[in-house]
Length: 230
Image 1: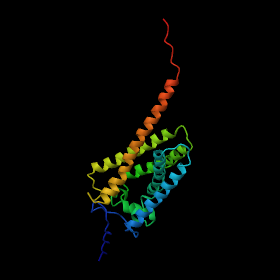
Image 2: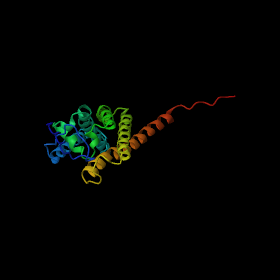
Image 3: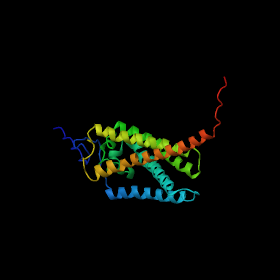
Image 4: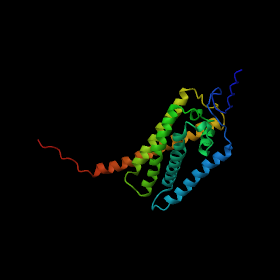
């Protein structure tokens, strides 16, 4: 008599009939994972705030912008970097950052099934926008002339990636999350990702204004060509 096939392990992801090979449930509570994420982000935020305060003449708004970019460097480079390296084994892996992604996957199961778009988008985010976010902070602390160029590049990349992230899921009918769930849908999927639309958009406008002002000054200082005589 043939042995009976093992029943699949129940999972919390959507759609509910999703088959996840080798899935192992988290052994860490949601509060532990969120506490780690927000406490480490808070350390980077506070540390950058005080570091930026040593720059003469820097405004409060600019200090907050640098805090944003440093937190982005951590999230992109470490957390999303982990996903870009270990996405094939995350469903069965019990490392802390893998469990973080399994928790977040309750709001978007594309991270659990290694959706092609998600893997490509997160890999670019981790290895491009992560280091460039840190470089942006350094450039402002050292008052480099290209600092607003970096701000524009990183913010445009973040905005473009996040718009595609939402749009691709919209086209799939928001099928990878429990619609309207207060935590998984509204907090994990909508709110946390909306930050990377609203803030980068404002920073693009800020970079545009500053770069345009400098270009205008350079144009005004340039000698005007003399009209040709007949």
